[in-house]
Image (tube, rainbow over all chains, first blue to last red; front, side, top):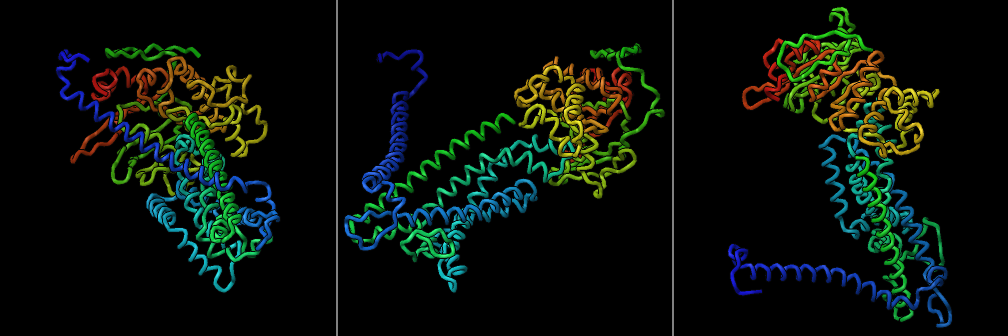
Length: 297
Length: 287
C-alpha cells in the first residue's frame, strides 16, 4: 500500500483502524465457534476413548453379573431393554396427546386460549426434570412402588411440551391457502385438518418426536425416583422397575471396579451415538419437510 | 357464441368493451341468485365494507372492480362465509342465497361453501397428483360414482384436459402457474357448485393464461354463475355482464371503508356511468 492519499482514501477516515477492528471481531467470532465445536469434540473423544474397549455386542446382549470374576463376560442388556421399554411407552403416551394439543391450539383454538396454553407448555418445558421426577414419585410410586410405567409417565411429561411445540411450529408452516382450498370446496374443518394439513406436517412431527426421544433417553433424575431399584436380569415388563441406560451409567460410575467404569463409558458412548444419529436424522427430515412445504406455498 | 351488439362508446375511455357478450335481458327478467341487503363486513371494530345492497343474477358473470383497499375481496369472501375463519370477523345485514339468509348463525358455513365454490388469488393446488386434486373433493363429498368421468369433465371444462391427460399422476405443483389456476378451477367446478367466486383469479398469471381463464368463464356461465373480483378493468370489461364498482369512503377519525358506488350492466359502467367517481375510475383518473 502506498502512503500517497488516493481519491478513494480521502473520504475514508480511519480505514486502517476500521479494518483492524473488523479483522479482530472476525477472529473472535471464529474462535467462539471453534470453542463450541471443540467442546463437543472433546466430550465425544473422551467418551469414545474410555468406552471403546467395552463397546461390543456383549454390552447389548449380556446381563450384568455382580461381583463377577474377571473372566466372566457381562454387559448392560437389562439397561438397554429397560430404556427401550420406558422410552417407547413414554412416546406412546406423549405423542398422541402432544399432536392433538398442537392441532387444537393451531387449528381450532381462539387466540386467547392458544396463547395461554402455549405459555403453559413453555413453562412445563422449563420445569427441571428432577421436579417432574419428584412429582411422579409422589403420584405413582409412593404406596405402589417403583415401576417402568411410572418412569415412562415421568418421561412422557417431559416429552409432551417438546412434541406439542415442534408440531405447532410445522403446523404454522402449512400455508393458509391450502386450508382455504379445502374449506372452499365445502369440506368440513376436521376433514381439512386430517387430510390436508396433517399429512403436510408428518415429517416435522417425526423430527420433533425424534428430538424429544433423544432428549428423554438420556434423562436420569426422574428415573432415579421412579425406576431405579432393579434386578440384574433383563426384563421387558414395565410393571416392575426397569434398569435404564442413564441410571446404569450413574450406578456404575460409583462402583470401585474399573471394569464397571469402562462399561459405563461404553454405555455413555452408545447413548451419545444414538442421540447424534437421531439428531442428524431429524435434521434431514426437517429439511425435507420444509422443502416440500416451500413448494406448496 | 358470437352474437354481436355494438355498444356506443360515448366516453373517451381507454377501455374497449368487448362485443362477444350477448345483449343483456332487462334486469327484471333475470333470475336473482344473491340478494344482498345492507351488508356490513367488520373486522373487530373496523368496518371493511359498509352498506352494500345489490343483487347477483344467475348464469351471468358479475365483476367487482375498485381501487386497492375498497373491500372487494372482503365482500366476495362474505358470499361463501370464508371470512368466518378470521377471528373477530362479523357481518351485519343479510345475504339471501336463493331466498335463504346465509349470514344467519344457524346456517352451516360448510354447507354454504359446498354450494358456492371459490377460486383464490394465487393458485393453491393440493400437494397431490393432478387427478387427485380434482378427485379428492369428489371423494370427500361423497360423489364417488364415475370418478374418472367427473375428473375428465371438470378438467375439460377448465380447458386443461388436453394438456394434462397424459400425466394425471404427476403432481399438481409441477404445472405452470396458469395451469395450476385452471386446475383449481377444475377442482372447484368438479363438485358442481351453483356459484363460483373468483378472487382476482388471474392477477398472478400471464396474459395467455388469463385469456384461457376468461374464455372458460365465458363458456361455463350457462352452467354456473360467476362472481369475479378484479383490479384489471379491461378484464371486467371483457368477461362481465354486470359490473359493481366499489370505492373507499372516509369518515371522521381517519376511518376508511369500502362501499358500493355503482352497479349496472358492464357496458353502462364503462361507457356511461351515472356516478362521477365511477367515471373517474374507469377513465383512469384515480385508483
